[in-house]
Amino acid sequence: MDQVLSYFPLFLLIFARVAAFFTTLPLFSYRTIPNVHKIGLSFFISWLMFLGMKKEPIALDEMYVLLVLKEVAVGLFIGLAAYMMMSAIQIVGGLIDFQMGFAIANVIDPQTGAQSPLTGQYLYTFALLLLLALNGHHVLLDGVFYSYQWIPVQYTFAFDQGNVAEYILKIFSEMFIIAFQMSAPIVGCLFLVDIALGIVARTVPQLNIFVVGLPVKIIVSFLLLMVTMTALFVAAQHLFDAMFVAMRDLMKLVGGR
Image 1 (cartoon, rainbow, N blue to C red):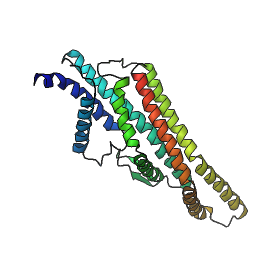
Image 2 (image 1 turned 30 degrees about the vertical axis):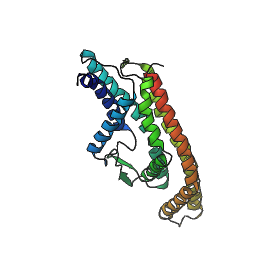
Image 3 (image 1 turned 90 degrees about the horizontal axis):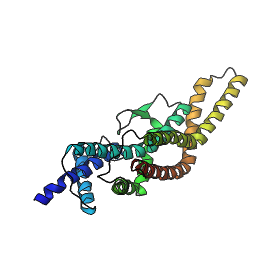
Image 4 (image 1 turned 135 degrees about the vertical axis):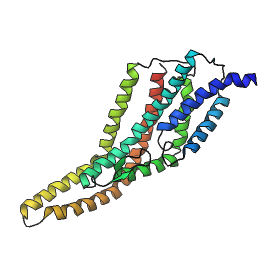
């Protein structure tokens, strides 16, 4: 019993990191998933990680509070890196919606409870299904498991490290770059449609271009989505690779490697 109590603070630290990781991680942090299930899954995974790692007793002293804060921060940082990269899918949909005229029609994102673009939510749902089909959720769970190789439980880092904040800003900028690259073909084609509609409006002034233009752009957008859906899935796979790399590099920076 004394041995169990001596290792209990270590288990709480592991549970703090895993629970914070699930708070911001895509798919696992959905608001539609009951909190009881999230806590139970975090507890179960924490217990498996506790049994599979090298255990050292940790004293309950004034440094323990800082260790708890560190574990929560590490879990949030890793999950935030994955969430920011996955948000590029919704930015792609937002750019497409703005060009095709669907910017005024938003839907509720079940993960955040905020409004999100219609096409963005559509593509984001397919991206999550693709992530599950490729066993990407296993890689995400491996990320928090192997994070202890880069950031041990007893390791304390300074919360004012500038390189961590700089790398998070780099991930933020890469999110927009990837989103622009993924949406460029469809947005570019819709821009050409706008030019064609402008030429038609100049040559045929009697035609109400606002009434004709919106249905034409919507039809062209759906056709382009059907044609480029395979390419978007391939780009989503590269996005997943970038997400895993971002998580790994962030763990290296936080761990001082």
